Image 1 (spheres, rainbow, N blue to C red):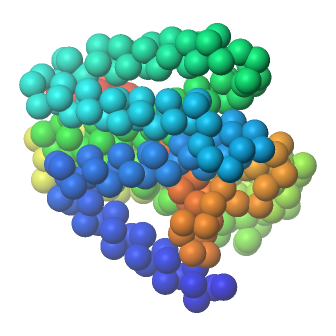
Image 2 (cartoon, rainbow, N blue to C red):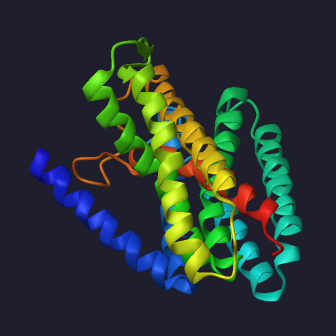
Length: 281
């Protein structure tokens, strides 16, 4: 199992490097595929399909709206960054109304909790993941900025693990994740802050046209790490609520997309918002 997990991890890193360094159409296609997989994993976990084997109407609708969502973002980015936010809101509102339409005109085939879970899955998966694409393609220096997300998520997770193993004593959420400690969480937040400062000092402020103050980088890193931990725990809570071990089997040794990208999903919009606030893009 360790060997499988290690090899899968190496493959994931290699794919991430290729996709985020290349950007453009390749990143759009890959991220769209990842979003589709994440949406299906979430709707499956939340029992949106019920007992049916084939995808239900809410699931199909969510997949269609994911395609529309990424198409609209791509078109908006190609014309003007200022058009991205209206395009996002238009599709999100349209998706909400479409889910209501399915609920009303198929009633009582689907329960309210299934429709709400389908909408939740659409926002949680595709919409949140799209901020990776916006961060990479929406900024002239996005090729450098996008790595902040992984420092905040995977970097902080590594720091939290190391600190937790060394000095972790106090359980943070014993009923949800017994192995996570308060000390580990603090180590993850501080570790991410340090990683952000180092990356900003040696990369962002040297190779890009952006100058980020190191205190701001530290705060952004700490905030990104904190929300990434919440994202990790929230994804675990969904699994515990529905009594499943993993979201899927797409990534050998790791589970599904949501098992591996649960922290990345929530770190991406925080990093994007932080960078947007401090730059003139």
